[in-house]
Image (cartoon, rainbow, N blue to C red; front, top):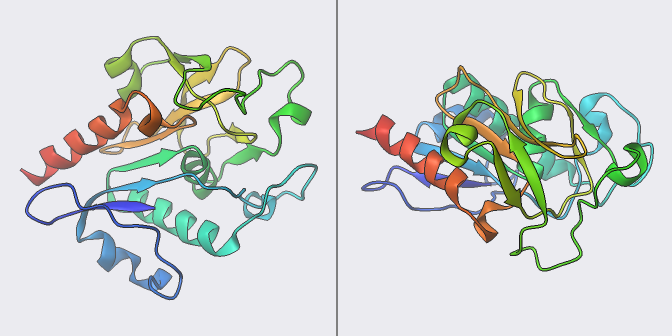
Length: 209
């Protein structure tokens, strides 16, 4: 998780904090000091217990401490109107935080799915994403090419709306329209087109003016 701090403008990024440094009960006060939040991906999966399921196949190194922290942060950002961007696993956290569920393993759960763990350098685009009405569609148009480094995906988006899918139907983008800015993308824009970050910063800046 990274936060964009009120510090003479926007730009100071903070690393993920441990549960010891960030008690869950202090989240509301903490978020009041920030303009926006990025919930990043990581080399772990959200354990299915967090969305009411048992493991049915491949689950990569669950991290309960980070998962619980990120779900709490996601809920607080949504409830308090803090602009938030979820990247890859962070998008999945946004969905689970609002009652959604995940595809535990795309390759075994979705017949005919694309390979979503790309075999090339993740700075290279791998597959298309078709975008529907929302912040991303307005900024990027109806179709983009993205990188892809995930084996799980959002199955049900919870309170969020699906605004992007790969050609195999896998959900690639979700948004919460009534929120100042709440977007999740399944790809990694920091390795390619950084438009989602720019949209987050523009929203944060406009609210701070």
